[in-house]
Image 1 (cartoon, rainbow, N blue to C red):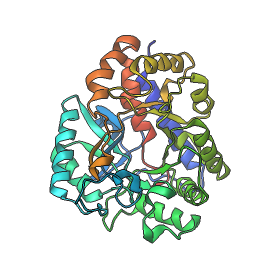
Image 2: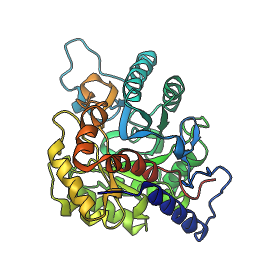
Image 3: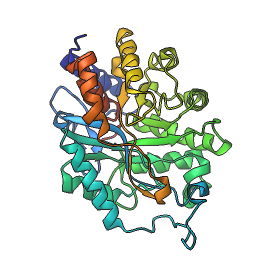
Length: 362
C-alpha cells in the first residue's frame, strides 16, 4: 500500500487551521512553521517545527514515581528498608539514566519522545528539559492527572472540574512547576473497573481544558469497557475525539479490530504502546491489526511505543519494557510487512499530528 505522506500532512494541517479559525478562538499564526505542516509541537525546550522530527516515540516515561500513591508497589520491602517518599531520590542518577536511554533511541534516529508522566506520578519538567538539552532529543511533557486511587497531588485533590480545567490550561499555556516549561498535552487514566467518582471530576476538567486550548488528551485505559466509560464522560463534555488518544490499547489481550475501529472511525488515535519483549499484542498480532487498519483506511489513527519507565521510584515499580524495542526490533518487521511509507506514517507522521500543540494556543 502506498501512502502519499506529503498530501496527508498538508491536507490535515490546512484543515486544522480552518477549523480553529471558525471556532471560539482564532489560532495565532505567529509561530507556525512554513513547511506544509501548519502547526507546532510544544516541547520542554519550546515550540518545535514538525519538519525537524525524524522518528518519534509516542508514549514513554523517563521517570515515574508511585511512592506517593499505591502501597502495593512496596508491600514486600526488604527488612530494614524504609518506605519510599515521593520525590526523595537522587536526581543526578535519574537524569543520567534518562540521558543514557534517550541516547540509545537517538541512535535509531528518534528525536522526539512524548513523556506520559503527569504531576503526582513523577513529572519533573526541569529534569526533562535537562535531558532534552543534553541529548538534542525533543521531549513533550504531560499536564493532567493520573487516576484518583494512584496519584492526585494533595494541593489539587479538592479542586472541582472548572478549577482543574484552569490548572491544566495554565500548564499548557504558561508553564509547569513554577517554570515557563509548557506541557504539550493532557494525560488521564482509568482503572480496569472504570472511573471512580472523583475521576469524573478530573475528566470533565480535562475536557474543558482541551476544548479551550485545542490540546490533545491521552488516557491510560487497559480494558475496553473502562475506556468506553471514560470516553462517554468526555463525550458528554463535547470533547473533539480527533484530539483523543486511547493509550494502552490491546494491553488486555484484545486483538479484535472491530473493538478499535469503533473509536478510530470517530477520529480517536489508537495507541499500541506495549511494543516490547513479550508485549501485548504480540508483534505478529499487531502487524495483522495494522493490516486491518490499513484496509479500512485508518492507518493514520495508529500510534506505537514501548511504554518504558527508565527510572522508577520505588524500584518495584520498574517496567519491564525496552524503550529501544519499537525501533530495534519492531520497525524492521513493520517495514517488511507493510512497507517503509506505512512505517513512516505510524512512527513519525501520526505522532506529530496527534501531539501537535493545541490549535487555540498562541
